[in-house]
Length: 173
Image (cartoon, rainbow, N blue to C red):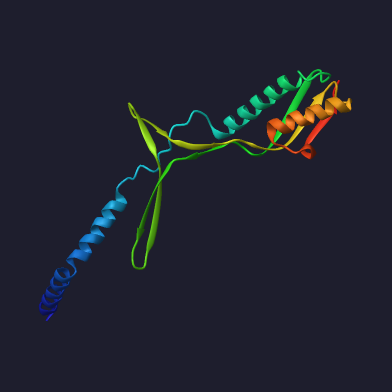
């Protein structure tokens, strides 16, 4: 009795495998593809950490402003502090592929990477977005003179894009 049940079960399985062999083959191929490494886990080499770039770029901007603003007549020694709304960032080139079916829609995005030889890979920047400043503080020895204050506010506004209400000029020692 048991031998007969096993025989029927075996015949039924063979019938189902024959009928659905292509479906099972596609499923097996999908499982194999899912198990293969995709390489997306690797991050492209970058010159420095974003927070270091942000601090370095803001410090460089402050230094340049100090140098330029100190040239304004009557300003004297100038110190500048800038605060950021959003730091500088880059938009990277991406490759997008879309797949539409009857009941499904799939979109996949990958970063475009250029190989430089000897295993080095670099991403391709499409756009560089400058930092957005929140406010500026300028401390200078001539900060009590209204004409100097106006000149400093106009200069800082022109260079940073800040409105005059976001720029503070103070008299220093």
